[in-house]
Image (cartoon, helix red, strand yellow):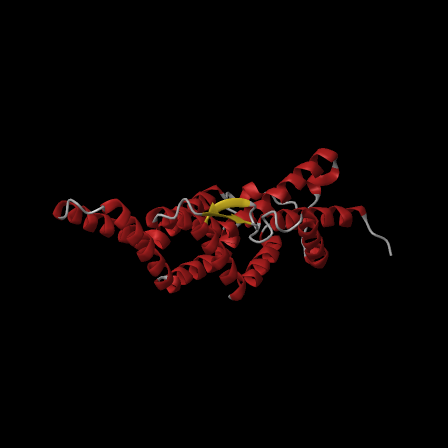
Length: 254
């Protein structure tokens, strides 16, 4: 069996896209999963999809063209991975806002997946969103969308031809919208508590408003967090379903 040079080039380009994708998607993006394992997943997926991938290697006739195509495939993989991770950026933002509103910003814990120190609520919501992502089967849909990306944007097609700037900026703005929507009940709760204790402070001057409101804010915030689990679940599920559609829309040729 003979293997042509063109087939090797196509496989390398497919591997670069899949490898970059696995370096950026949730669960694989942190420090908990070794780089060798992430590369192994990319290698395995590239071997499976390589025979089905359309390719145009006209520009790869020389060394500079091959480098440009390699950088192009890495950019496509990272772009698709960042689109999926937008949901988790929104969840992290919501966690920071909730921690600030209920007075637990100083309480921090290490997130082993990301290798960073975040507030406890942020880490909790991140793991909760990641759990929902796998329980609902969204990881299968993401992999299907990634494989379809080779049909929409074949090997050798430049990602700038899809003009992804507008879609990507729109997704970044949705991160702030979704994060604020998840944290909105806690922002409203903190506002009501502040107003209530401001009135109590005027009515009962000897009352230690600060310490009492601090304890009430934490207790009410934890109760509200448990009560709003279904609301957070609906936001996460809708956003994860939308991210699969955005993955394909963002690379559609303009």
